[in-house]
Length: 243
Image (cartoon, rainbow, N blue to C red; front, side, top):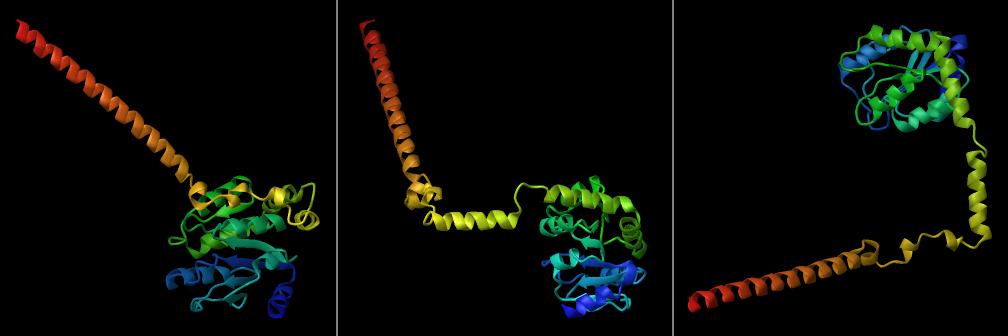
């Protein structure tokens, strides 16, 4: 941590860029990491990059690679200018909380949709395809969100909305913990499902009852139909004999 803080403080007025593609993506193809490192080397900002793969040959002196970074702490650092993210929900909320504009590199799942929401609110630029991305694409995206004041302003607007609530989360958590303690476990808040047996919880007794009723109805219907058909056939035979 002290090493990261010293590195961040050495960035001067240019500040730092935080870069991570999430905990599920520790390594990327060498070709892609080389292009990314080449782009980052062109920035005046210092870059803290969470990456567990082999260090690219194009890695610049302004970029340091770490197997782990304290993401939330770094996003809250006063020298942070931009956040390069894959668009995971947790990272987006942390960036919004601290008012940091983003450059999105969505990979899969809900990430593209998440980044589109932030882009439409003017707080992010999206790189559509990390596979086809060229170094200049990343440089242009970062320069846009860092040098165009509208991105920072929009990120801070989202942050103010996020913070605008009647009670702070910490205070609310403390209240409910003390509430449970005051009321001896607050059993009145306990979900009644905990008092049900497993077959009741999964409504197996209800299903068994409904199936039994349905079976009985079908059985009666079958018997009635059979009786009516037998009666009709008997009458038809009796009529043919009389004729």
